[in-house]
Length: 221
Ligand code: DX5
Ligand code: ZN
Image (cartoon, rainbow, N blue to C red; front, top):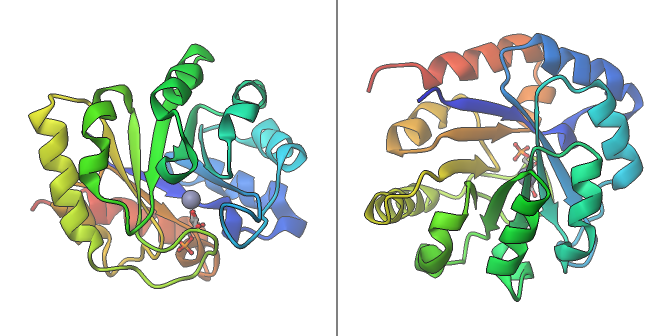
């Protein structure tokens, strides 16, 4: 399967948001990755519904929304209405995760589950067949521009083993600290989707940076 690149809009220039969205539209990127933070689940606040609405108005690619918020069930219908194609909730923020996943799918979206660096893969065993995308946090969520946590490679291997053991079709997404230094190794280990924020948006030529990341995912292993 083709491997996917998902630029994280958290690192875009919010004063030039439309310009940066058009850049992603024109690039080889596959998904928009949109980080919603509530200042409670994570120690930072990013942006909410009005900004997401402005983004989806211009975005011409798959919209991947990553909720770093407590009690996400409150807003599932609203995120579907605003144009999310995949809605990812945090394992650590959901008391009734199975119910939450069904509610996301009932709204016509793909259902994602993100896990923090300390959360063990085995905890997903009984819901893996209900998850379209597992987002492995390769930094502690809350901020862009952090260093990649190397233990992520072990987690990719464990998750891949779980997915094949359960005969699931779940995609493995890596979020945090992705660069041209680790992209190829992450794909070789089993990742399907690479999120990249600061590496893309702080580069001199983001379209070229995305093209470069995409080509790294196509190398033979
Ligand atoms: C972190 C967010 C990430 C972040 C990635 O809490 O979930 O999506 O934007 O940013 P970089 O690529 O800069 O680590
Ligand atoms: Zn994210």
